[in-house]
Structure formats: structure tokens, C-alpha cells
Length: 205
Image 1 (cartoon, one colour):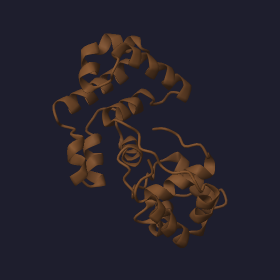
Image 2 (cartoon, one colour):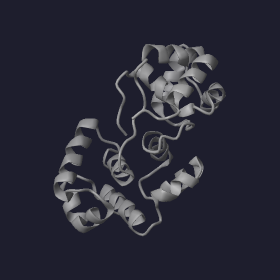
Image 3 (cartoon, one colour):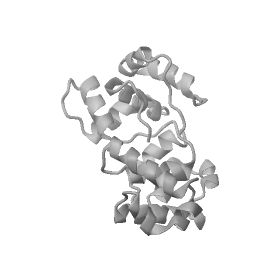
């Protein structure tokens, strides 16, 4: 389902920034789609770290076969040995079980996020081992559909800004931040369209 703010954001971005506006015109029907259950989304992000998309899918499929309906409780019940046998490194097993523990004890509670700002959610998520700021920002965009996230460390955004605004010259985080002033409060949407300038097919995080 399309985020409720999407069409308004498209209109505002097209009016304020001709570069983003042109990308929007090239993708008239595309939009951000929410990514399911919070625990499953974060678990999948951990599984996919530092390996290819194909390898991550293979390991993820094995985890689902071993665990069945993935939840904090089922991940804990399966245990470290069986998770490791799915192809997860010992460190990723530790990360996944730490994530499950945070959900199970209430240290992470998705119900609280509605009343929390973006930085508060990022701070909570990055308390989990294996979840850094970039992963938390992707979660804000793709799971919580927060409209104004600017992932300055994202390589895709940096490359897209370099190509679209600097004729391929390198751009700093400060440079991106200055360009992105025109995008507020829709920086997630602008980022998403700049990703489309590199790859028209949306990636699932």
C-alpha cells in the first residue's frame, strides 16, 4: 500500500527540486511499500549483512525452514547451534539472539515507536548488537515509512547525488545535507527516487 503522504511529497519535491522532479516523472507509478513484521525485517537485515543478495536469500530460506514462523520466541527456542547450521556465522547468531532477547523482554517495543521521533527509534535499535545507524535508517524508511529520513552514509544515495548534482564528482555528507534542505520534510521520498535513478527496481531491506 502506498504511504498516505506519497502524492503530497511528490508534488512538493517536484516543485522544489527539478532534479528529483525529473526522476519522479520517469517513475510515475512507483512508490515505497512497507516491509512487514518489525522483528522479521530486522532479523533479515542481520542475516544479509556483508554477503551477496543471493547468499543472503539462501541462508534466510534455511532459517525459515529451521524456525518455521519466525518470531523472537521461535528464534530463541531453535537455539544457537541450529541457527549456525543454517549458514549463519557465530557472530550473526549472537546478533539474531540478542535481537530476539530485546523484543522478548520489551527493551524494543514497536508499540512505543508511534510516539517516538526518528532519532529516538534509531537510538533504541542501535542498542542491539549488529544493528548500526544505516540499518536503523533503512528500517525507518522501509518498515515504519517515516517520511523525513536522510541516510547520509548510504552509498547509493551518495552515488546518485554525485551523478545527478555533481556530474560524477564526489560529494560529502555536508554537501548532501545542503542539497537535501530543499527536500524537507520528505527526505525519505527524495532518497527513494534518487535510488530509482540508479536502479528502477526497488530493493527490499
